[in-house]
Image (cartoon, rainbow, N blue to C red; front, side):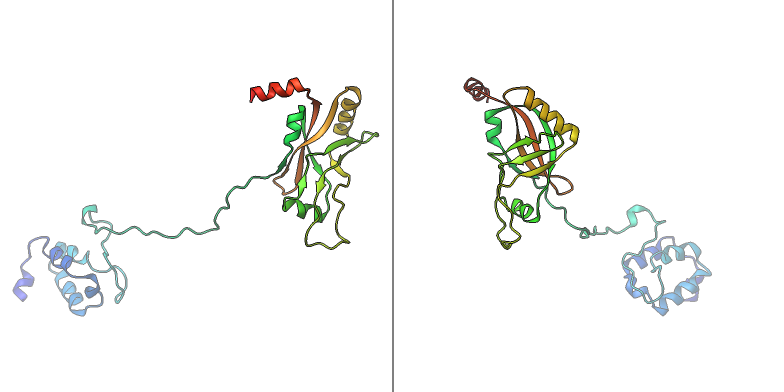
Length: 234
């Protein structure tokens, strides 16, 4: 045994020996540590190759495939990829913000201008709109004579099912629109000075701030010939 220790072995011997031995058995093994420490004084390069396959952590811990980074890439054992579950909340599907469309207005009127306005509603009306109980088919906008505001007329919003009679709203009550004074004055001037002009609601939708918005249009009535022409174009 002493003669073997004093005679240097060929290079790569310890590499083949320790490659066949599991790293779990080497961790914390007193004979293996004693052998390495004894041979290190006489055989430097070969022991360095052998020590490369020993676990790099503290004694007693299990290291699977503990190969240092300075070895060639071909000597590394294949490692299976980790498929971790992605964290965070799931993204909700994008839903349409559209509430209702006045198709009858596009059929009977020629839309000249469009404008986005807000509306003043009560709590039960907003809840009924979420339930789909709004109809803008017969609605129209009436500018006030003072030219400071406009009112949405003849819009039907059904009563809320779970609200008491005291908190209910009138289904066809006049509802004030939220727009600038200059816009209201301009709409009043165009409807008064030009015959055949009217203002009708075109669409109702939810804004990014989760508020009800209306798209109103300054319209001119169509005759039978214009309606037939539109049908032919479609």
